[in-house]
Image (cartoon, rainbow, N blue to C red; front, side):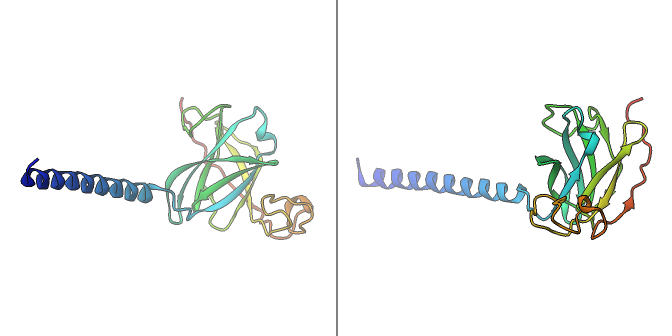
Length: 179
């Protein structure tokens, strides 16, 4: 191989390596920019009798620095925990086995819920047209931070009420989804 051919081959190999490294950096930057920032908060939901039928829970959330997005709830004791929630949310009670939030196939849902100053939701009652209502409140702490109804915490709702539990009843706007 001549000296000129070796230089050309070396230049070509370096150019290809540089191209791949730029592509890898671009892919990493894209992944970072689309990843959840975790800027939202955690909201606890006590489904009560709404847990009958083993539903899967999703929340549509927005506001407060959180992009419009779905959040799937995870079971923690008797509560459903939603992460990365903005200032507003809508709870959806989905069929067992659901893997994504879906307006058309949800069993039941709430109206818009303002959770800008709340992090605890409690099922109240069934409403009309596949809606249900919730009570909003705040969890003031306790011995088990993952359980908002820790009975050892005097501010917890299961301790007999009072404390930091706000009693803001929530009105639902009736909305006919698929008539």
